[in-house]
Every structure is written in C-alpha cells, then in structure tokens.
Image 1 (cartoon, rainbow, N blue to C red):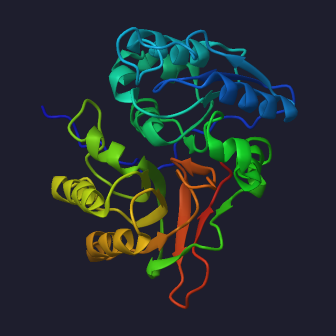
Image 2 (cartoon, rainbow, N blue to C red; image 1 turned 120 degrees about the vertical axis):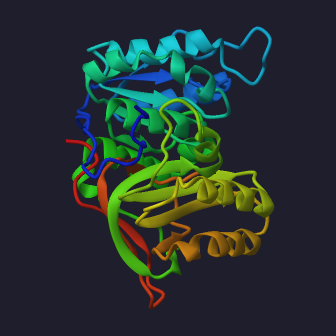
Image 3 (cartoon, rainbow, N blue to C red; image 1 turned 180 degrees about the vertical axis):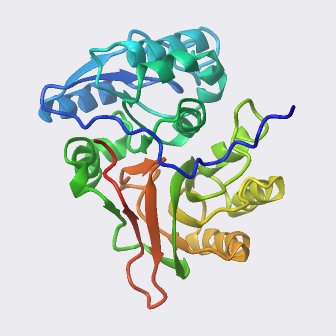
Length: 321
C-alpha cells in the first residue's frame, strides 16, 4: 500500500514550554561552519537574557574535507539528538545556517526525538529542512527565527526582541508583521503555518518523509541570493509537483541579495497570484536585516488588506505554552 501524502495536519502541532529565567539552552550547528567570535557574541546576548547556554561538542568543528560543513554529518546529527534527548535542556538554538541539514536529517532517531517531547527549536535558512522534519516526523511546532551567530541577531534590536518575547512571553508575540508588510494578493485566510527558505522546500521534494501537499497550510517563504529567474524555477517546481495544492495563503519574508525587488515581486505575483489565495509580501522574516520570529505548525490568520493597510500573520495560540 502506498503511503498517504504528507501534508500539514489540520490540527496544530505540539508546542514546547516557554522559557523561564535560568533555562538551559543548547546551541547546535547542523549545517555550515560557525565563526567563533560571532558565536561568543551570541552566547553573551543569551546570558544577558538570563539563559544558561551550553555549546554542543562539535559546534566549532570543521569537516575534514568539505569546508562548507561544520564537522561530519554524524557529529552534527549527534549534537542535535543528544541536546534533544537531554532532559536538562529546555530549548535548542541553531548557531547558523549555510548548508548541510539535508545530509544529516536522516541520521537522527526521529522515534526517540518524538518520544522525548517538544522543545523550543529556533533557526532558519538551511534549518528549514529540520523544521519540516520536526513537523512531519515528530509532530512538533518550531520557531523560524534568527540563529545566534548571525548578523541580524547580533545587531538588530527588533530581531532580538522578537525572539526574546516569543521565548519568554509568547502571549505578547501573536501578531507578526513589520510596517512594510502589504498585500500582494488581497484577502484573508486561516491555516497551519509551515515553510521557510523556499529553495530548501523545493530541494526537499521527493526525499524521505517530505511534504507532498499544502492542504490546510499557510505557507511562509523567503530566500537569499537567488536571482528572480531562479525563484521562478523554484516556485514552478513546487507548483508542478503539487506541493502547493490546497494552500490557504502565502506569507513572504525577505529576499536578501535576490536582485532588484521589482523583479522578485513580479515573479512572486506571476507564480503565486494564480493560486487564488491571499499573499502578503515583506512581512519581515528571513535573511534580511530584521528577522522576526515566526512560529511554524500553529493556527494563524493571514490578513492581506485590499486598502493598502499593513499585512499581518495573527496567531490563534501563543507559540509556546
């Protein structure tokens, strides 16, 4: 018998507990190598929030042959799994993205992770692969938010405040959207949020346990360093595969270093408007100078006002319990 298509469950995913002062958080590097000085600066910020950050053993490793990876696939997977299974760890934060999550995601013991229960998990970019895996293989909600060794987290106060509020006081962080957020396609829709870096979503197609339907989902997408024609190809692949069938709405974040935004916007309108669902642009998450924290796997309402007002993503429940 063929397996059922993997798509967003119409029910919300399991939420982790909010953090309290003194909470122990593990820092992992599932993808690219981490600059030590940026890691140290990020750890200092976390300590300033009265958190107790613990750096996983292989975070500062370099792969013996492949310079684009932070250590071997097995070591990166072991760091993440050990952190998740450690009952003294309250949250798992990624140090940076880059590339490498696809190489290690199948090395994780997802049954053991599921049995351990949900924890706050934060990252974006290449970490999209893990967000999808936590949703589809473990049934856990996660946070599409800044990595601690990235420029946005280290330098942007709005980015820092968004993550801190989400972790400690999630009831005050249920409305997402900068003043730049406007309707690309007007409308209003409800669904379960999912997504991340759109090129990673496309790269995930056809892999074990990958999503094959968007039924009941609110898709959140962004990317970095992709020219408009490549974004066209990425979205076209998702459309042709059926991976966007049944999507309720689309929230677009930043398109940093993706060429003039007019060209990106034209592609987004051309590829997404025919879906006939609301689309908000420039919501304020992703690789841009400001990176808001966006919960994944939870019910929300996407509002794309036709009158030119600010677009928002309004959550029906706090990101953490």
